[in-house]
Length: 71
Image (cartoon, rainbow, N blue to C red; front, side, top):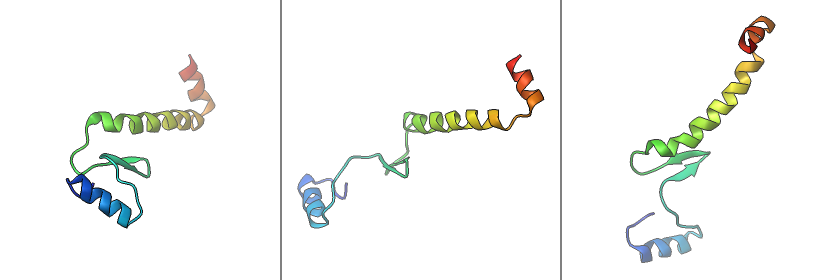
């Protein structure tokens, strides 16, 4: 929000032909806020990264290490 005043925010959004929204916003999938983010804001990103890393770790293991992991 550009200003705390709703009428000014609406005026600016009409002037620049853009939407006004609430914080935190997402930029390239990462939350961005004017103040410090809470842990809950980061949880979806951490889960997504861990999910991708699990698949990557399994594919880089040798055959012997895979066998140890399965057992």
